[in-house]
Length: 517
Image: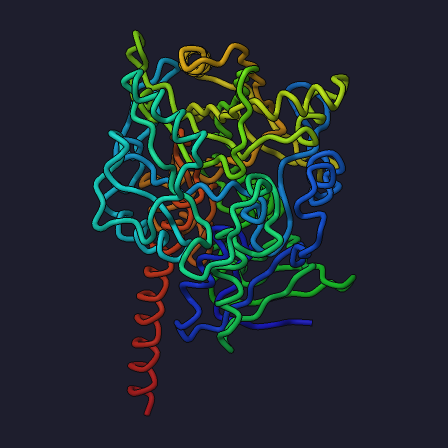
């Protein structure tokens, strides 16, 4: 069976979902394809045991750690809304310097083919769409803004406000981290302790499903197929255009045809789809004349830090409200960028038992009751040898060796000393490994030179006229900030480009019809 549309979007996460929302009134017939279904609203949404121990919402799939020849369960989620269904709702902009070449201790972070200024108006739009709460002027590294945040910052609870004061006494600049939550007037958010890493049972998290896909489906021109696995993209005999997409839906193989195809499956799965789509015109994978498809895979250098003050309980419920960027571009006694330090959602014993299965639960609960919990993030630099590929059996194989580690360890030690000066006797750290890939990016980088990049600055494949990739695949660098808002901003920018392009097509069609008559 064959189905025809103007635009097919494969994936409904931050890239695909935002695109569907932005294109819903364009007049184009849109088909959204999602391999999963809607994540159910159920009591298990807020259960640490169900979410972390039982991994209720993770897919039953494994990827191959090619360098270690071992398998791991990836941190991906296949639902309408993609990974945003369980993300921490952090919505920072990248810094202006993140778009420029930046020297790190471990190497050079390359420049982007667009400037911060080109993306700024789309950052502003994305903040509106995703209910961004924040306060301009607190973070000394923040880039210029065309206007204030749409909503006021999420206030600190008293314990965190006291900690912020203690950090200011260390000449630091803690700031309210931009968050996407429904804390608008009459909003649904109840500031619970199960937000960061959990699905939201009351749909108060600003995810791509709630903020974009559901509103897009109100348009008669937008259709959604769930439970649909994209197999391979098909090209015309010339190899210059994608003409179809093979999918499997309800046990049936179908072919979808469209004028334009947009891949938004996430950095790993988007690259895998292009590799699976190899044909005689593209023997190494679709859009891979440069040999860059799947290469330069990045996921950040991440460490979780738990600081414990045994003499004081931390009664905070909603903890993820503060971050520190004082060491983003330069560390203390260190001339290179270190990265970002941000609070995590409040840890609970059921979450800690995953990492510490041999420690009795009462001890873990006592620690959690007295801890402040941080996520420490440094830039992972692009390396062509860090890549994803497909094995002969079709399984995903991931090569990833972390780099820029000296700077990251410097940041971890700086954060540890910061908390000890604030009165926290015990500070525990847990570095994250290959399975922590929630910030995956870079496998289909965009750029001006087709010899060194896969996509152009509007995320169209250099090698094909009508294929776009809009998710974190296009990132030339990972920066050291949460990527969600940057994905959304670029999706809005690409949507504007597609709308203008479509207007040109319609105009040309009208001229042709006028001449014909």
